[in-house]
Length: 343
Image (cartoon, rainbow, N blue to C red; front, side, top):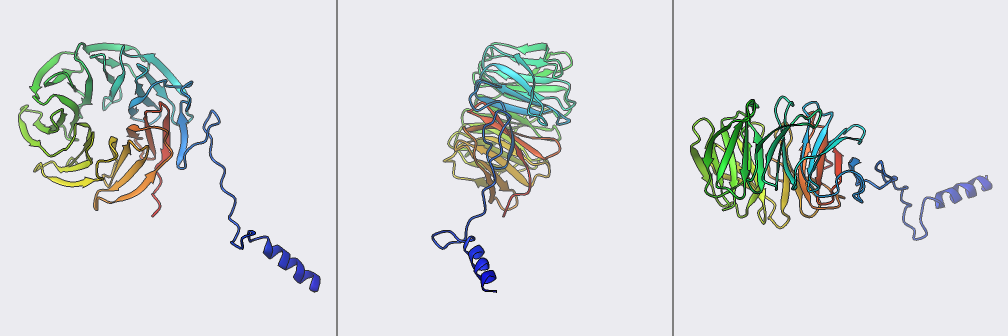
């Protein structure tokens, strides 16, 4: 009996450290990417390597998922467009797309046409399956930083920092359509989900809301506080989220043009915005290499993802809502599991 008690006492001592504190359970081994480098907590894959010797060799400014979620398209300062398999992390295709940085990609609603814009001043249309160029819509436009398909897929809109106008093209023919004068100079464009409105952010730190059918300016949103590179409509079309240099994230009521709320203080510039499909959460990527999740009902921050290696400049959510893709300054793309945040 005495021997048994002594053994039990010895085993009990093993559960304490030398300092007398309970021993910590062993840490879970860090997950590794396909090249053997550790992944941040919450990330399930990295597309490309952290050394830039695989995948893109320059910053990634734009990401878009295919309609079935089986492909992810990326555009980079290395002047290429690349296609990835999110399930395996493999690069499926790569092609030289422009003679300057690829700044924006947009995929038509039917998934049949990929549009790209670049700092080389051109706007081009591609076959997303083969990577073959179908048409060059324009060239010599300067820095084309805004690009968006209308929800019906018949029209493409684009803006350039070097022009005071919003350009439109008919996708079926490539024919230019009547332009809208935007004296502030365009930064970014987005169509409302119903296709009736077009939002355009400008270099003079305002946002124009236009009636697509009449091309008339309905209202101008002021008090942005910085030049906005990113804007996105909520799925129900009632809220517009914007952000840019030196500004926080602003939430605007589309019907009235009133500023409903601001998220953050603007000290960590957000280069990426994406709404979840239910519109309850806004996801933002920041200069400080973190991803933040915001509750739309309260405006409160509820979760963060950390471990990115560079400023986050773009984000995209898969059609099934299960995967978040982010990238930016470090050229590699991270895929995150969108599980419910811990409270």
